[in-house]
Image (tube, rainbow, N blue to C red; front, side, top):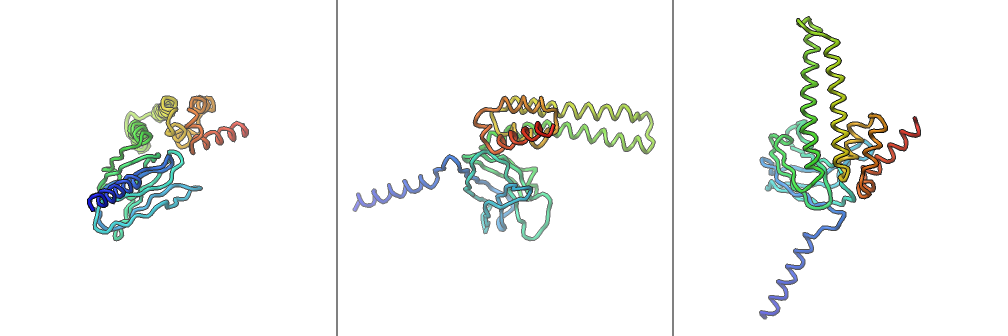
Length: 237
């Protein structure tokens, strides 16, 4: 009898281990949303400019969630929360998913601002990138505010000087994005940034990023899109 129990327990353990095992093209997304115990979550991706649900998670009494989906290469996904009774623009969290295990912890009241995402190197790099970009955005807002006040008659305002500052700021932002992509060309975040933030940059800069991509990145979703985009650009020019 003892041997039978041990054998059954061993089978149970093996089954549990196999449940947690991921294939190379799978991502396990786990997390907690404090303050949300009832509602729906959707894991979404963009397909032809439209958000498409990959998985639906129903929460009924627990704030934790789990989702396993197929993912051939790192890709930006969305975690959308259906609050059920309230509408909010703070309900769609962008994250850079990649095969493996990713954890997302956040708070319902501050869904985006409180989010902490771990387990994805591309996400980590993208957060570093966005942190600097946000500083460029703050400077741009300051210049736009000065422009508005100047047009209303503020003293010591120079439209020419303000315009030059805005142009210089834009150039610095583009150069930062290009250098960041170049420095991280071994990760899929590089072609993603090239496609979303600096797609209209001079071809020589984009070529530099493209040529530095690793074979793995070149074969990824964004790597292939970037290659295709550059070919079209060169064809049209």
